[in-house]
Figure 1 (tube, rainbow, N blue to C red):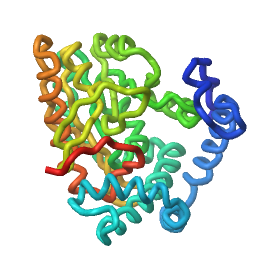
Figure 2 (figure 1 turned 60 degrees about the vertical axis):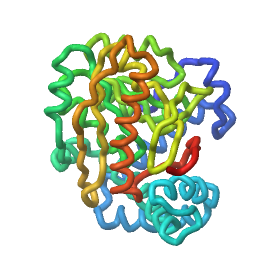
Figure 3 (figure 1 turned 180 degrees about the vertical axis):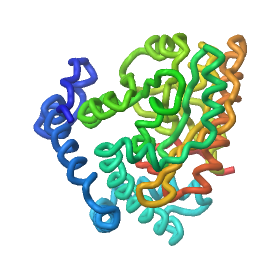
Figure 4 (figure 1 turned 120 degrees about the vertical axis):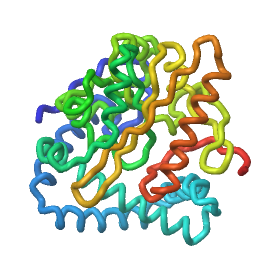
Length: 315
């Protein structure tokens, strides 16, 4: 694979702390490292790759207490328990091991996208096709559950319109930009304007966004019921839906086994009426939050919630 492209210099890029002191240099180096790791990891036997992932995940669990604490805080809400409870500690460890397994499968999928597409199961693609057929674009709304990156080749293979993914604007995202574009994804960085996202939808295309991480400088949020508590979740998905009339299709990408994945699209959420303003947006976001809560409670060990969530009181 070619090395990662050099990102365009922006004000946000200066704020990113990265190895070597320069985000651009870090992206170039990391891009080469990922390419090499994919070349090797894609050739490893499945059992060997996942045995190494098991070892690596347990090592990370042992040496990263801050990650354990952050995961424990969020996963405790999903489980209706306290962060220090045994059940939560066990799920945190399983999530960190699953993260390592996802990384192993990601390297394999990068190296062998055709093999991945032959083994992946896709449920509910007719929902996406019907939403796209309206001609008003479609918002693919997910969270950090499972691994959408592993299934990055699916949109070009199965979705009838071009797909743009909204990603973080940092050295890691720059490093893997070439991998995403090679499988047919278009890239929109979070530091970009809302107008760019609106234009994607106005062209009748798909926009993929993960909606559980309120990353960035004070994003607009709404207080909703989420995982049995009140939480402030980003309003971007529902605001775009209201402004463009684009339906929202929730999705998740979860493993069925080693190197076997399922992409699941579920019933579309209708866009809020444009005149309903915040009331309509809040209602749509609550519908999304209900869907995400159900998925997280079924698969808490796959929720990579390694970021801060503004939690309120438990219900």
